[in-house]
Length: 97
Image 1 (cartoon, rainbow, N blue to C red):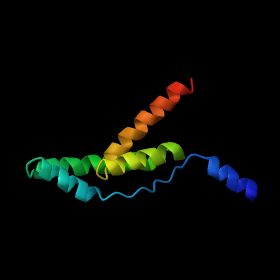
Image 2: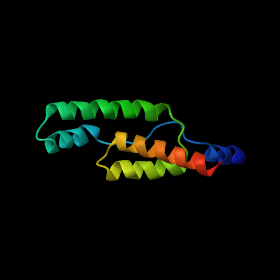
Image 3: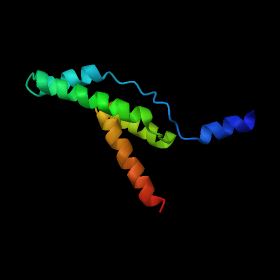
Image 4: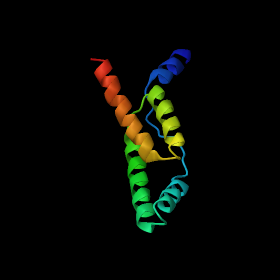
């Protein structure tokens, strides 16, 4: 059992567990954009798309932790988190060559 737990800890995470209030984030973005409902709607669409992509990605814990922090600092944005994950995965693949 102990060996199984160690192996599980080493596997990349596949279940997406981060939780941001993206509705509040998008409302703020719309307000910054001059009170635009279209900007708020576009933001919500992008956030939902990012959530769907993140939900099916295998993200190693180090990248997940770093990018969750970046998403939080970015106002609670899954879109920002997704961009971070994509850049980190690309950078790691170049380093690992």
